[in-house]
Image (tube, rainbow, N blue to C red; front, side):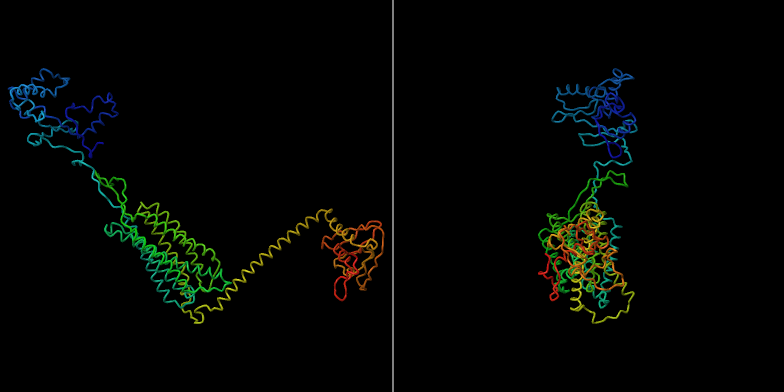
Length: 631
């Protein structure tokens, strides 16, 4: 703590070189040069030891004569004895005692005029000295009796300026950077001009089919909400530099109203469009027709909720100007002993967290519900609302930016430039992107087809068209369900075929299956009437086309005579017959007989044997005759 901003005051009875001696003994970790630099300019005060008038005192000597006698007896060239500086005071004390006995309260002395206060303290003059370039310079004297200061020399200060007796604290208001504010205002005013131009465009070309089928009134509400949001950007940048302190609460309330109502109008209009598309898609079978006036009523309800909430907030707990203070800061471009105390303005109220929680909760639910509807209707396109997909993309954009901006702006609220830039850019981007997505295709359509003829019959979709569209949606859903069922059946059949093919690869499993079927069939036959011949019963005449009989029983290809059924020949030999299925069709088989067994007619598979054992069909009814059944 030394330099131009500090002046040290010491008692003046130290030796003249006190700051250079005994540094190591006293544990001072500084060099003599550093101590001399730190002590430069300090001021000492002490009671005056020698009379400056050099007048003859009551002892008959002047102060100079007393000093000569003292130096001759005590002072040596290499040493000043202890107490040398106080010797005049000791001499005067002896004379004061003598004069006190004579009832003389004051008189001239070696150290000047001696006078005592009512408490017994001596009222002497005070000497001021300053260390300049390593030497003490006497600045002057202060006489307590006359309250007069006699200046002898001028004080010298570091930096040629008298140091201040305290650090000056200057209050500074932190405001948004003027360049940033002007830039955001330009973007906002440009967006306002574009929005007003699009309002005119929407009105001029309101009869065009593309605009007429996009709910132009809803688009107008979106544009009005965008204008309010862009206006809030300008209000967010206003601070104490432009607004007086007693009017700042008005700016706070205006910010809340413009941003909240603007968001409700712009996002609410897009939300109602997506809601209508979702109603068309999900309520087709109920033949529900959503009237446009209902959409406007929905936006009005959202706006009414906003107005009621904001009125309640600003009546019960109005916003006011609140000051946030920061630690002292050093000036950048000055050497003065000045500190800056930054202050930042905020809009605040007693229950701000509660009100913001309610507002964010309501807007957040609206955002989430709008995001859900936009996702559900992402692949639906209606003639009545031809820009539903673009509106859905706008909703995605708004939701993402809002979810990012709201928490971040609360975290960086103490950084005025970063907070303003982040919030302002989020609002501007939302507005610009929404206007571009919704209106750019319409503008391009007008440019490409400037003279589109308006057909009065196409002004509004008819009830028949809407019902036809709903039926198509219902049929489409039903077909998709049937396709899913068929695909599941195909998958199961393919799985069974793969399992059957895997079973055929093992020989034992392939032979065992028809053998078991044959044994089961023979148990139903009469033991006295075993199978025989080449084909008895009505099933014998219906041989599958894939039958490949042995070469001995084959008939020439040109022979088309009917084959008479072979009679059943009784046999007492046990029937042991197995039929190996063909690898091609899995039904026809070639017989494999064993000795003393009646052969099964060639070409009859297990299924054929089971059908054969039921007996012949009745010609009249076409059913199997149970009276002639072998079961």
